Amino acid sequence: MDIEIGSPLRPWRQKAVAEFLAREALDYDPAIPFTVNLLDDDKIVGTGSLDGNICKCIAIDPAYQGEGLTATIITQLRQEAFRQGLRHLFLYTKPKNRFMFEGLSFYRVAETADTLLMENVKGGVQQFVAKLEQPENPGTVGAIVANCNPFTLGHRYLVEQAAAQVDTLHLFVLSEDKSFFPAADRMMLVQQGVADLKNVIVHPTGDYLISAATFPTYFIKDKDRIPEIRCQLDLEVFANHFAPSLGITRRFVGTEPLSPVTDAYNRQMMEYLPKKGIEVTLIERKTMDGGPISASRVRALLEERKWEELSRLVPPTTLEYLQERFA
Image 1 (tube, rainbow, N blue to C red):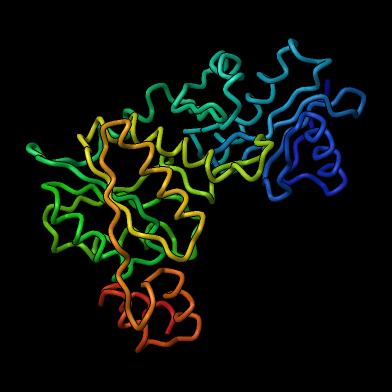
Image 2 (cartoon, rainbow, N blue to C red):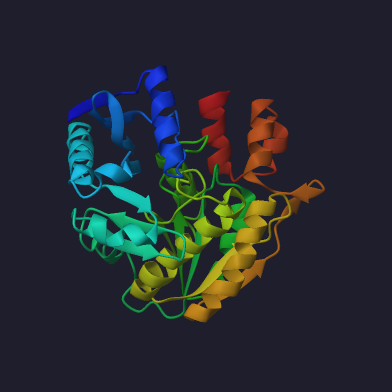
């Protein structure tokens, strides 16, 4: 058995991997930066990839299953992750594969009927949430999860309205670097933009609260259900790990007139979270100049350097950042 490594694979081998995965009802993403293949007489009999800290596209030819090839692939992916300085790995897979990956020292984070999220640190999600700041006497606790790409007056309005209804408000900012603005900058702008609201605590989401940008879809057959499946898994993580540890009983979300996908997510949230004892409050989106304030609108105005219009949509701290970086 030969081991082939590509960083990334050559185009002709990418095509072979895509064809191999297709036979296993999986999709291949040609943008994956690292792939390891197991070859028998130059025929692919197993493959697996590493995309950031996510292990994905792992498959073994049925004729070779039971020979420990999955363990060989995982070992290669771990070695590459170590070389890149990545210690904390995740994988998304079908629930039926749970016991196989548990045998390779991956641990369940959350599971739905369609998707299983696992990590290579036992109790990693519990450790992460336990380290989040919270007051000694939190009272009624609420939460907002947002990308803030960048932080706008619409976000500020949502936070103000939510903070007025609870004693403690946890504001989670997505940590992934898949947005126009870097995660560190988005976090900074949020912290600056709510600094005067004393009952608001700003947190990163780490790798746990899942966005469309990072949710892998290679093993989901019905592509039309991808937003629904991602939402289910994300809400499972929030309801079973974040909310109990922080005492969250309310979640706030803004109305979404612009994105049907986000609107569907909100509706799914309003149906699911109350069953977990978490009330969902929908707050009407703040408008300006005849339309809702949105980060996408801000980015469009930024493209044209329309500073006067931008000044009506973002806090002074965000405007200063935008002018310093883009003027």
